[in-house]
Amino acid sequence: MKKSAALIAIMTLVTTPVLAAQQGGFVDPNTPAASVKQGGFSGNSGTVVTVKQAQGMKDDSWVTLRGNIEKRTGDEDYLFRDATGTMTVEIDHKRWEGQTVSPKENVELTGELDKEDNAIEMDVKQVKKLP
Image (tube, rainbow, N blue to C red; front, side, top):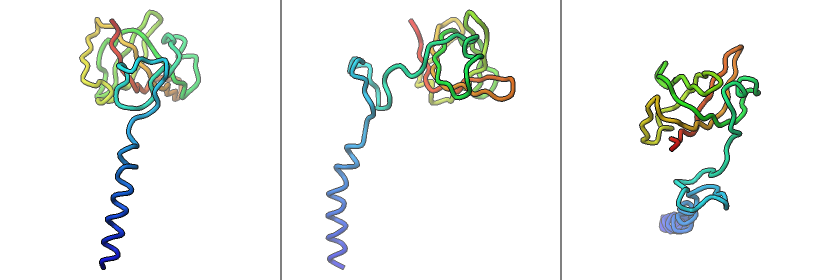
């Protein structure tokens, strides 16, 4: 019994620093340190395209759109508009990260295109308000 308790104590002491060191993520060396939040990829995640260009792209393409969110059309669905057209975007509640956005404000949405039949939608992974 004493051996198993000692073994558990030793394993706990050895593994705790390893678990603590597994925080963070990739940091782009060209990104200023102050702009890095809580781990994950920091850098260009998708090509900046228009709605019209996105409609001609392949399913699962990673893109960035810039424009305005006009209105909510469902629980997590919104109508996005840029100068070339409109597209449905799905934004999970956690992706807002405390930001409040109105239809008059410009945003940058980064995510993955989801094409089914003749419909296209963007699964948004990051919402960024533009100045």
